[in-house]
Structures are given as structure tokens and as C-alpha cells.
Length: 265
Image (tube, rainbow, N blue to C red; front, side, top):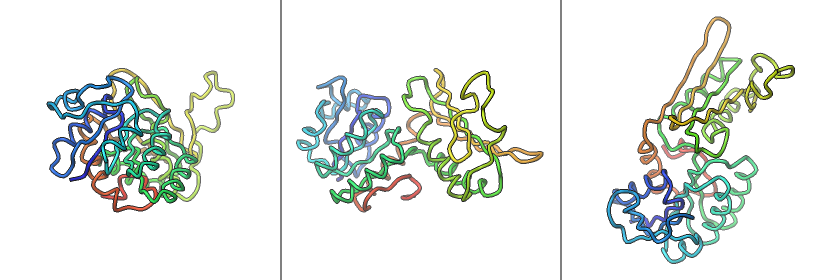
């Protein structure tokens, strides 16, 4: 049995992870951490009955007391970087679903992982369909000269662009080998600054935050006389759990930082 601590266990994603860990035959919930609802039973919060695991607020103490093998983090962008270091310091392998980490953060995490000799797994999206969307987008990037990304999320999402959009733009740029042409030119003279979105590798990224959405992304390619759209829609948070469980079971066999679910599929 793999002993798993969940960080951010009172949040929407955290509760789904608790439920998935408790239901899986190869994993055991041994700890739960959140800044809110301290001393609540993690299983009851997730809607799957008593777990005898109570929410704690001190991550380092919980990691030591729980004797966790793996820690899954779905906390907040402001907390995740420090959480990863705490997990490494305690010798617990992190599986990170919290987004908001930049390229500099990833480089630092890779170095810290090697120094601690503890593997780290980070995925901007744990949905298998989203991984396929990125793979298809990488193939299209070789043949189309212009592309844009529109990502739609609920109004409580704190970071923009999403980790999925950031990762998609990265793999598209890597596959292409050079920046995309900037469709429509620069935004100089625009009456609404940034109306053309942020830019990564020549790809305009537009972030929509509205009540009613969960998590959705559309990659749009264009060339003379035609467009091609690739879209992934998340209907419920349950779709992330097969990917999370794969990462929990794989991370301890990895080395350094592994970034992206595609690396273990």
C-alpha cells in the first residue's frame, strides 16, 4: 500500500483526491492538510465516510506524523512552491496538480529534487483527454503558421493563463522549432490594452474566468482559407483522478522532476 497525504484536502480538487485514494486498492490515505476546516475528518468532507484522518494545518508536522510515501498537492499558487520544498525536506515524493509555477520555478524544483534525491511529479493537467489535446496540437504546430489558445475556467481560479494553456504553448513552440507568426500584428493602437491576449512563442493566449465554466481549452490554428480547432472540455473533476492515481503509483520510480502526465502514460 502506498501511504498518501493530501495537501489542500478541503478544496474541490482535494476532496476528489481523498475520495480516489480511499477507493483505490493500492493506496492508503494517511494524512490531510488544509488551511481551513482543521480537525474535520477528511473522508467525511469528501463524502465517502469516516477515514479517521483529520485535517491539519501544519504541513511539515503532518508529513512527519503520517509517514507518507507520497504527498498530493492541490493547494494554491501562492503556497505550492514552499509546499514542494517542505515535502522534499521531509523525504516525501510530491505529486503536484496546483498550477501557477513558472519556468524558473521548475528549474529550481528540478535542482532541489536532485539535491534531496526525492523525485517530483508535476502535471498542469491530469485529464488524459487534455494530454491528447496537447499532443495533437504539437503535431498541428508543424504545419500551421498561426495559432491562438482560448482557455475557459471557473471564476475562482487564481492563476492565468492556466497551467494547461502554458504547457500547450510550450509543446507547440518546441514542436515547431520557432515562434509562430503573430496573427494580426502587435496590439499597438488598440483601444483596449491586452485585447489580443498574452503571448508565448507567438501564440496569443486568452483566459476567460466566468461562473458556469469548470475547465475547458480550445486551440485554434489558421492558414489561408481554413482553420482547425482542437478542444477539450472537463465535465466533472472526477476526470482527473485516473491520472492522479497513475502519478501516485509511478512517482517513486522516477528521478528528478517529471513534468507532464504524458511521461507516464
